[in-house]
Amino acid sequence: MKTTAPASIVTRNLADIATEGGNVYEAISIISKRANQLSVKLKEELADRLSEFATTVDNLEEVFENREQIEVSKQYERMPKPTSQAIEEFMAGELTYETPEAAPVVVPRELF
Image (tube, rainbow, N blue to C red; front, side, top):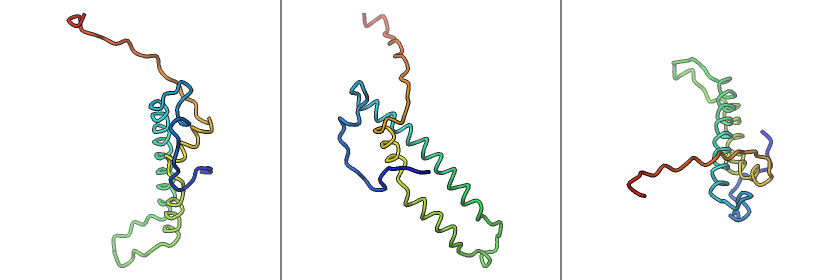
């Protein structure tokens, strides 16, 4: 997964993150949903790569440390976090999203 997102924490200006309408909360919601998508994808990739090293041995004496498996795990640990990657995608305008129509508000008659 190629990305230009930084691997470390970066301070952001909330005004830069706001959507076209200036709604910061909507932007955060969009970013968090994208981060969840990226996280699921990343976990699936890691599980697939690590499944290559899986053994069905029950005997503890035969289980050994697999250096390739450790290197794969370290590689994924060094990658940018899904949240950082989602923020970069949002800021670069690479995400498309639709805001559903606002649902009508139902108010009980007693309040009129």
